[in-house]
Length: 129
Image (cartoon, rainbow, N blue to C red; front, top):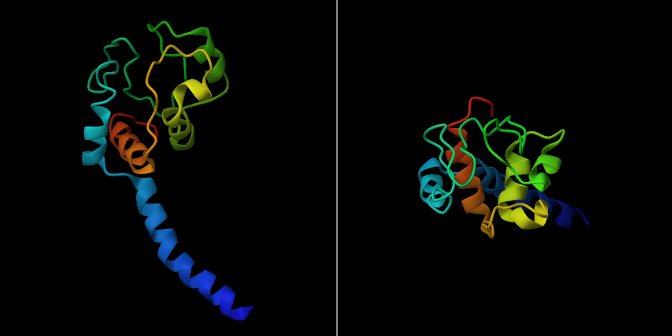
């Protein structure tokens, strides 16, 4: 049994740093991933498009940006929540699965690296992180 414990500990030494790096995300890669979002969302200004702008999205309540008409489903989903890494990751992976009735037509990002990258990119435009 001690050999197995040592093997697990050794594996953890190699896996934990790589998992942490994947979670941090790459801003430049995230900018490329965001191109999938930019038809509907703006991050460089506070102008809404088909979807709400994403400036200062982190720390903001989902479905509550003044001046944007959200679906009732998104408004209800956002009650008592704020966008953070975990919620954003969950939502962007499967928007229609997380918020049944959302008007967002995007199927989601299935690649964990893309998720981490686009979140790193979006964080540049948020004062709360």
